[in-house]
Length: 170
View 1 (tube, rainbow, N blue to C red):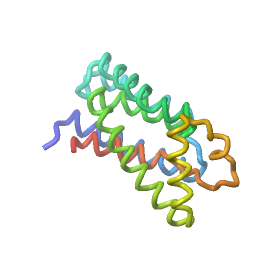
View 2: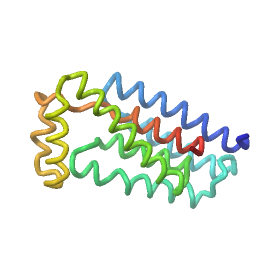
View 3: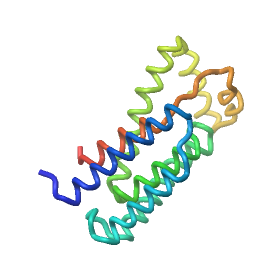
View 4: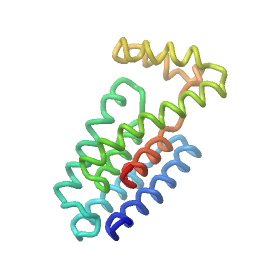
């Protein structure tokens, strides 16, 4: 049975995650007001003792989320909005659960990437380019980000799934 503070966090993560996923699917962006509002809400919950975290834990969760997502951004695998969204979820989850959320997000993102590649009939090419992206530490980003390559997809749904699984404590 979840405590009230845990229920609040789960509901917040589910609501914000669902909204961010829909916005990203629709616009291909995660807007700054959504990420900033989420971060402010997470810190406010901590300050008012409603989330089970201290303000320091909420801020540390933000930092952990930022540090975990930043390498993907630097090599061109994710967008800046995705980084900010994940870091903002860190204020609700705290540092420990944020690390688990990252693990679940990577799994969800991989499943989505394979599904998108299969749907677009580009699985082999996607796997090859991804391997090359990792091997070269992002030196083929321009090639991958080229609009004609048709391999990008919204990542907020993966972040929403990962954060929700971590919030539920699974």
